[in-house]
Amino acid sequence: MIKVLFICHGNICRSTMAEYVMKHLVKQSGIESDFFIDSAGTSNEEHGNPVHRGTQKKLRKEGIPCGNHRARKMCREEYAAFDYIICMERYNIQNIMRIIGNDPEHKVQRLLDYTNRPRDIADPWYTGNFDETFDDVMEGCQAFLSYLMEHLQ
Image 1 (cartoon, rainbow, N blue to C red):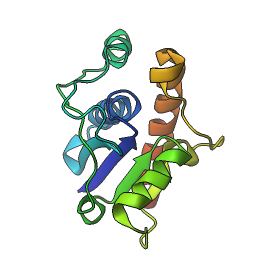
Image 2 (image 1 turned 135 degrees about the vertical axis):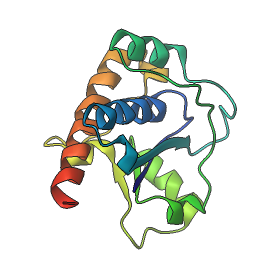
Image 3 (image 1 turned 135 degrees about the horizontal axis):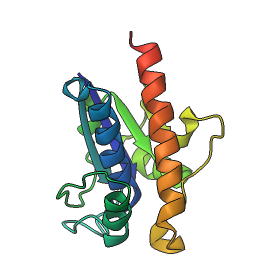
């Protein structure tokens, strides 16, 4: 089983969007039983809060089911529990390192590092642009899934 943890700052916008997009993609591919996918944040600011209404609305518009995830902070033990820790921006990497200490297995990557245009994913909490964030998340999840299919067969 491939275990993936998506990370952003508060765990209500980008990481939850990536969690549900990735779950949707693996289900469409008929391989959902091969995956465990979750999300978390690097702060407690949104702890216990539901998925942001902008993320929920965009996922609904795209026909992607959105579950009842509640924001939570990543904990140190999750480094050992997950195969991939996929974050949305460089700032998340810095905060993850504060939580886990170091990354000897090179599990921590940005989602868009798997694409032809590595970059950060803008936070729609600040930009208000959930469409752009969704496009980046979809691009990243598709590229990440392709990477996994190529490298794990």
